[in-house]
Length: 261
Image (cartoon, rainbow, N blue to C red; front, side, top):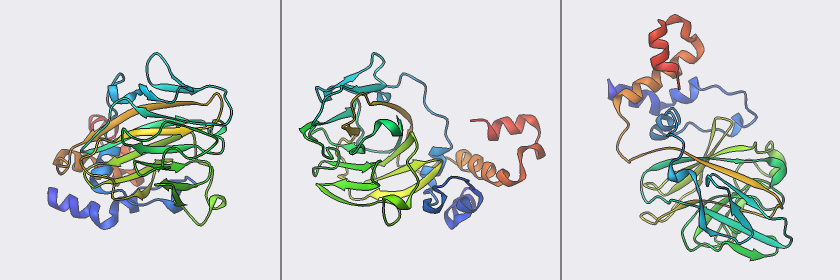
């Protein structure tokens, strides 16, 4: 049964059954099986150390709140400022949620990952996350992917070809495969970066230039490189199959088991 479910998901049925009215639907891709299961997994409890920004690895123009889940940039000019997560990862598949209001982004709003050697402050306005070989970032204001000081488009042919990036973005890091991607409006936008260094400690990271910008982080969940459990695959496949049929065809107890987050 598990093998049958794996083929069912792999062959594109997940994409067929996953409907979205988001403006990002034209750019969406069917997520890999491990990611599909992880996106269907309830988030970890609040207070996880991975849900915090680092209090030591950040620009002097940034201040982390008491809980560690939010960072705020001072109202200074001609400075680019970055912060890394408090805890990095070296293996596994991981998802972080970042809340960054569109009106607080400015000209260089980079979201991605970095090693511990990425610069955290620079004069002028520039892309810190992605500006060197040790970081990878997506500029939410211009739809540009940055790495090693080089940039390219992520979605469509240009910034005007995609809708504005909403306040909530999920960062998807597969440290085992060495890939980084993003989820917006429940749409997996595909792999943005490949060939990230395997075995290196990687941290979620942002860099910004907007005075007063507040950026929140939350670690949602993660998994090892092992194949998903049969129970998780079964639950996911049934949930997807019920999207068009609706849960009313099942007894209430089974509804709660399969459909409750």
